[in-house]
Image (cartoon, rainbow, N blue to C red; front, side):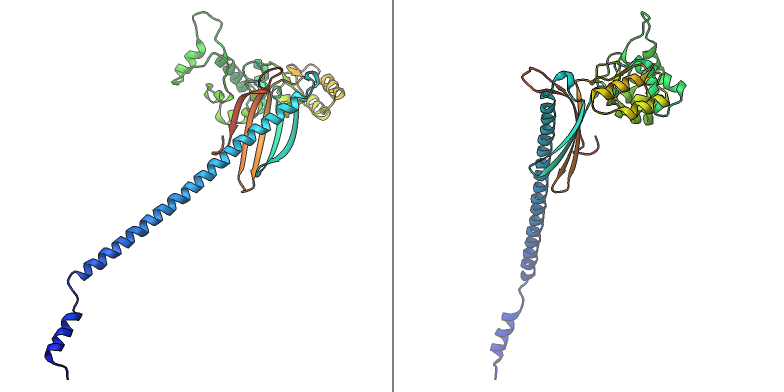
Length: 306
């Protein structure tokens, strides 16, 4: 038989104390805070690893592009300047990436600073602009790169002010083909179509028809469809083909069969992890200099479309 005293003691020992619930809540709160901190730290570590990986890809991409430029310059330096190739392609593998390189003479493009009005108008007309409008667009480019001849008057600058633009024409050499977007009156769609065919690094009023795109050859003043098809059909390596092309040009103006010194180099990189990077640079090979070449322009799409 259990005594009343023992029963009283047993009841007292099993009764919950008032502060037990607070302790449980505190412990749960601490565990939750620790879990949150662990999650935050895990996210931080993951982002750090991703950031390091991206930075590593960027460093490798820049090094691979530089390797492609150096190999291009080396190929050109091993050839006689009088018979130096004006286009070519090669591939190589380095590290954990495959690299494809193409290069072409910059003289195959129309120089915005040197081309005559007729050549510029021919390009715009070939890209879809009405002939009257194409002539006007060419005049705007001439007006952007040089001042008017009348002393004390600047009609081109006045036209920009009348149009409500906050800037005027450079009235100096184009520093980049991207300035075409700023030229008054040029439709954006036309500018976008023209960019692959123009340059500021040729330094020549004519174009190398042996390497130029069909759109550029078609833009030559005096070019006809029959003459264009004949020229495009005869292009190829060798001096014999060059002479045939020259004879087919007839009265077409602004054509040349000599390549320029500056080269546009396109580099395509395929990493083993699936990432693809493209870059385009214009280099000027240097003879008898401390450096093999000079980089005139460099664009890449590592962070998105350039």
